[in-house]
Image (cartoon, rainbow, N blue to C red; front, side, top):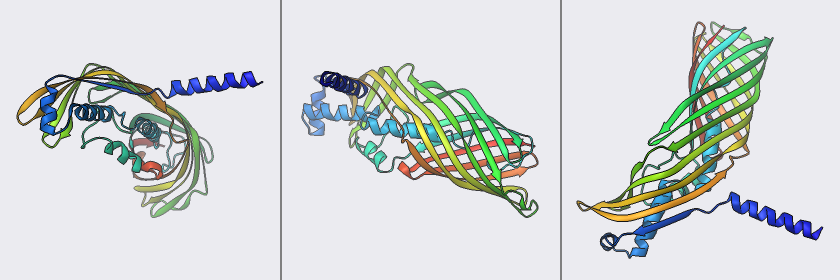
Length: 345
């Protein structure tokens, strides 16, 4: 038994070490870099550290575990509002198309992520963001019971990164206590309980090369020209449980809102194996600094449970319904905005 336990402990340790692969950043300065170090009033070791830190921030390695967790949360939030209808009264069918842009601001976590670098600049990879576009269809199975399906595949891009994304989902909704009031003034939509399964994936890759400036000091920046392998994949597998209500005013406007609990699986992972050529720019001249190589491969899970508030407004013109929905989770200040158009009858 003791031998078996030791084997299991060794296997677990090796697995953990493999999952938490350390990042590698190697900076090789040219002799000309001494001129830059003199102007910045630091030694070559300090310049090497500064250049390495800025490159780590550029590629999301400054706080990579936080960056990946927030990205996984944002990918899950980007599904919200696309797979079910919360305010359209219909007896047979609803079809539509919607889009959601989400971000996990990270609250203090994102401040740490941004603060790990000198100055503000655009990262090579999107920081904790998600985008989804989806077509949906809903059917009334019986009085108060509805079923929805949604999905779409499409290309995605962010700067020099190109890739693809897709989503697919299915939801069941039960509405009760609806129909109180009158459509001409105000009609309560009752209570709706919605749950289902949401699956999505987005992948971005560096297809060619990436040119990006990062600051070194006041009046000095570093132009980086990067080639190699850079890939970010965000996956979401979410089971939402939502309780919502709605109110239709003067027929043409509907308001709705409620609360949801999202049980989140999936995750975000990044693979990095790049070489960057660095050139310092300042005082009207360009000075070659050298090269740097960066390597990393790792993944993080999203928050397992996220409590979310949702609210929306919808314009009704006959069978056409245009909506905008805000999804907000206090955890890390995760926000998603969904808009779309639906046809219901």
